[in-house]
Image (cartoon, rainbow, N blue to C red):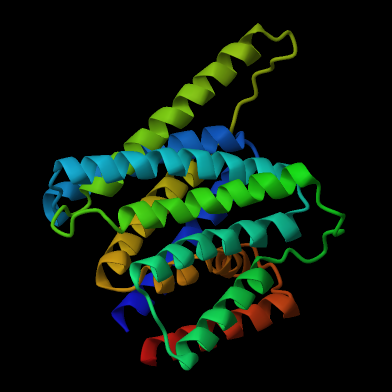
Length: 287
């Protein structure tokens, strides 16, 4: 029960982070949003460390660093796949790959389920595709490059879950602090290189960005780091397979805020996905 609650909460909070990141990315480049929000998230975790606890053992540092590299690769590939599109195909594909990879590893570790739990997992996987579907977008045939980037993104995100499963249970938030720092360093180095390149370009222009968009970057970093805490707790409380499937529901949090803040309508196919997600999660909780 606790694992399901934490896993579901992780997905919703990740979705919140994506919502604010998407708002900020309307005026700020996506790589800038990701790099800066990563630093914000690290500072946030640093401020929580004295209260939650963080023991930087060798294993905690190694798992955190590995997860940070996977995070940098996965996020970069995710944005690349979304830029190529179509979003309605590559986004759910990345989410499903991000669930299947750790599920397969969880099976290797010994995760076994009864029929009811298997049905529930199947329901949630279908829900991931339906919730992640973007209505109103012409569904063109995806390119091989877009699909490859989506698969890399899913594998990167799934690898984060696998690696953090091996973080010491008594390390507190040490591993995710290292993860956020390593990921932020990689992305900011990339951003610095991009800045140098654009600076030399004659077409480079400067445009003042309203403060509300930078607050979106801050909110994305805070929610993303909060989700990191929730999924670490979820991984330490239960099955890697269950957590990975529930975490893949992160588009759910995005459409909830889009409905509440932007008054966007939820498509019927997405609502079906929401109901399937809730039903599958309820079955998992009692299975």
